[in-house]
Image (tube, rainbow, N blue to C red; front, side, top):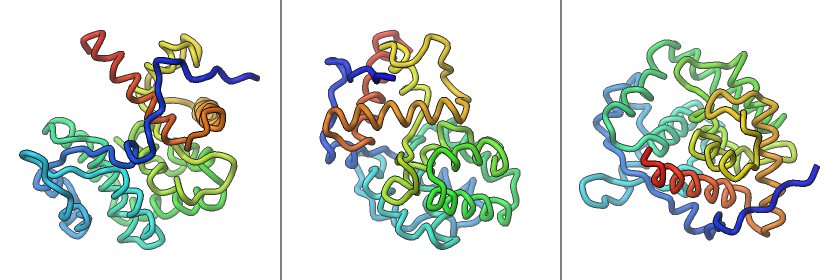
Length: 232
């Protein structure tokens, strides 16, 4: 099946723009939700401050995947992925913090370890399916567990696809440009839909001569513009 080309109004950012995408965070708000202070990745304490808040970029979190073979490394990677994807709003941090309420530390460690192994051995689609099923964690939905998959496996995963982030912002842009069908959901995507998304973005990236996460970022930026135009 032919894949629609990227529209002219969805420009692909440069690699350094993508990896430099930085999000502000409040360390103290996060510490209140973590099982203990050792879960906090000290690497974030060296992030540059811009105005009131320090900011963590994609490059920093991607680099933390090097330690994902260890329990501590996976804990830090999960927290960093959540921090990068959340921002500083109290309500948003509180919602993400609920991830640490229900499973025991041992259960969460097991799930994170199993997901990383699955990424390395079976690939992004299998890991996505596991996060929806056997390795599901309450309050950690696709919009955020795909962030963990992305950071953990973008530079090291099996299969034809690198894991990429899929959220409501990206989905709105894909729907608006009719890259996906009108009934494509804004959350809770099936494994088949995630596989379709990865296939689409990877093929668009190949056509554009770009890395896959540059195309994912292009769709995210397009979705943000769409939200602003609609006042949402």
